[in-house]
Image 1 (cartoon, helix red, strand yellow):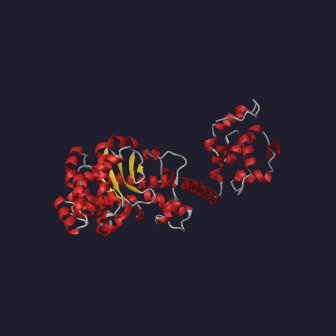
Image 2: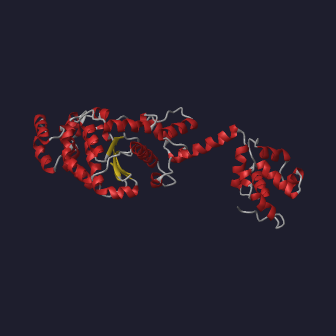
Image 3: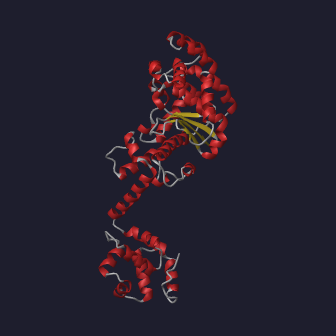
Length: 401
């Protein structure tokens, strides 16, 4: 603790003795200790410091509604402690209402620094009527936090260590932390097997033909070999397609509902499985990887992941072949059945290549039916931990096989 150099050498020993007991005394007690040791009266101290008694006493008693900053600094110098330490000693003596106002102001500052509150309101996570206290309560309960300030206190928080964040960066952190919290709670007990994943991947695409139960069946199979898959909707203009995390040395995948098109769910799953196969070690060091329509946010091989996903679902040879029959819906249905894929995968791949969405969009279903069975929207729940428990139960119980 620094001693004010303006005090005379005669007084410094008394100040050091006082410093040793700062943590165990209130501000009033620190003042009285110093006053008694110096043998000064309140009026003498008032004249020495240039503080009126009617201003000094409310500060010492913790009843001052507003404090003159200069007077507070003078008092810190007199006692012989840093300004921040004096403030810490003063805070517990203040009225509860005043302390509450200070805490609300501190919380509000943290909220605007760490969260994009406007976007969270737009997506329905918060309501426009939420006060600071209600927002803090909502976030703490949602993430199962003891303190609001625990939001970014772990390794994942250090991956978002920028002090000044854009709106997109705040929403990205909120989105990925939501997934991280669920994966920690799910805690897949199965050992991850890369060799078994390689065996499973070629067998996945036929399940795309079952809109309602195909995706959840594949998620169950992946869960059994240590790969956990959950769904989270997009929350911002970040255009997130999916993400891959590595938690407890096991791969965890988030698929999103970008563009609300059914084939995109399968493309996103295959894209992230590429990252599991070939980038897991890199992801484990960086904490997470997000796949976005704006490009790769953590890695450099998104084109390879896209190509991998496309070839697994519909190879170049098959796409080139079907282009000659694309205007015949009956032929598309026939070849989709023959190749073991949902016909919308043919149409969406073709539309992506030739920008023909307006013509064939009617053959591409939305994600509603598939997402009904894989899991609910986590951002509509009050607690991610409870949401995760339901997902885990869903992935373990063989209801759809």
